[in-house]
Length: 213
Image 1 (cartoon, one colour):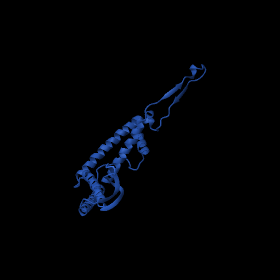
Image 2 (cartoon, rainbow, N blue to C red):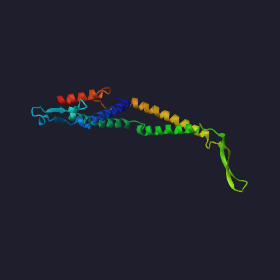
Image 3 (cartoon, rainbow, N blue to C red):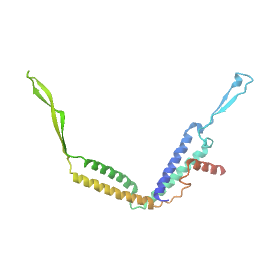
């Protein structure tokens, strides 16, 4: 499989572990609860009634197999991680580093693009100013007045625009290179089941094979 499918299968294995773990984390799936209604203690000729709680999962009777399934999926994840690591080692591009760097390039370019949208401006703010004066009694009192607010950009717009353009261009180039790596790089790993199979199908097949063995 190529690198892109390897990452997809990596996520598939992770999701399988989450679902299988949820089965074992629900106490009702890993214990049997039987309640006996002691009716004979109240009425001598009455029959005691036994009620068993119904487990929420159809795999409740297979806790051992589900646990073994989890261990096998973990082993597959380890095997796939090693295969991906080996495949990455043969690339000229450091994928892990470049993914993080490219995210930073895109974020920084967005900051710069926002900066160049700013414009010089001037506006009047009614009642936005204040001052002090002496009244007829000689006391100092405050008063309100209109204010003029001038906003001036304090950077070189052309330089910032150039930086944003350069970052975007670099990010696009790296994205294309990363996409090529994902599609063209082979990972030496053979999946034990079809990626599109459901959790129910995969686990049921595993339990069936374990029972036969």
